[in-house]
Structure formats: structure tokens, C-alpha cells
Image (cartoon, rainbow, N blue to C red; front, side, top):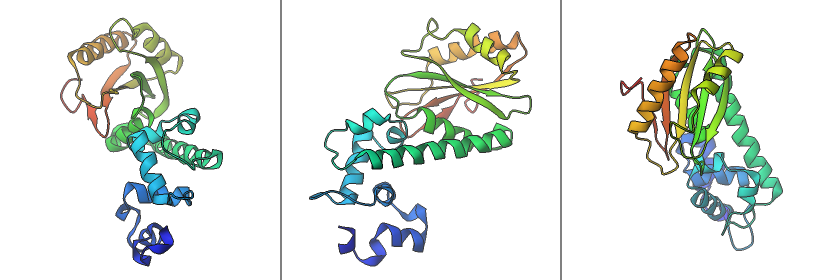
Length: 226
């Protein structure tokens, strides 16, 4: 029980005194959950939830049915699930707003954070594209393909078609590695080159290809691969 903790160790008091960064992951989540269950305090509930979801990235990408079906996590009723999903969506929208207001490469860390929220923790491999205007501001993020990514499963013509429909001037490619490792593969490099060539035909630049793993995000442009 939180009331049994010394006042300076309770999550709310610690946050107000020292800032949100001072809290552990389970403490942050406990503040949102507010209450535990009989025999399971709110900190234990928060810790169990994070373990089941493999951290915040998995939690941020969980669907309502996935949250409802978590094993060993009691007390996560409809109200708590709705609150979690609402907070997750607010975080995504807040980052998207910033990307729409300024060129994405004025804040590359924000681009990585945004894509980590969108793709981190997904059980399947997903290929997404950030479509940008001529000033490199965000027009849209679209998840275009999912499953095992290969040259045969990501169709350049579909990416080109959407770029033209949105009148995009540039794109940032992105996909996740459900295995957890964000290291780009040779297949990732070849796919990037193929899409660069296809999009160049309609004067759309590929600015980056970002790979999202578990707790790690790698920019291929920063590696000199774009």
C-alpha cells in the first residue's frame, strides 16, 4: 500500500518534489492506475503490467483486447484500460503536432520518439512511411505493409502512389524489428535503395529509414546508409 510508504517515497509526492524523471517506470504507471486490488498493491500491479507488456513500448502499442487478456494482471478493468489507451494516444498526438509544425530534422530525437511510440512493441513486423511536405513537415504517418518484410512484400508502387496522392516532397521510411534488435539488415539496405530509386522518379526524397527495436531506435541516415 502506498500509504504505508514514507511520504517522500510515495510516487505522487516524489513527482511533485523531484519531477517526473525521478520516478521509476512502475511508479509512473502506478500514478495513472491509482489503485491496486485486494492482495496486490498498485505498485505491484504496475510492475506486473510492465513485465507482461515488456515495458512502455509494448504497453503503448497494446490493443484493448490485448490489455484485457494479460495473464497475471488482475484489476485492469475497462476504466483503467480506457485511461491507459487515452494517455497513449495523447502522447502520440503530442509528438505528431510538433512534427507538423516544424521540419522533422529540426528535432530528429522527436522523430525517433514518435516512431518508437507507433511501432515499438508490435508483435508483427510493420513497414510505415512518414510523408512530409516540401518543408519536411509531417503530412501523415501510414502503416503500409505488415508481416515478414522482404522485397516481395513491400511494393514501391504503393509508396509512390501514396506520396503522389498526398503531394509529398519527401518521406521517412520506418519499420520495426519484433525480435528487439534494431540493427539494419542487408535486406533493409536493399529495400531502402529500391524505394529511393522509385521515389526519385517522382521527385520525392527519402530522408531516412528508421528501424525500431525494443528500447532502441536506429537511423540509417546517421549510419550513412541513406
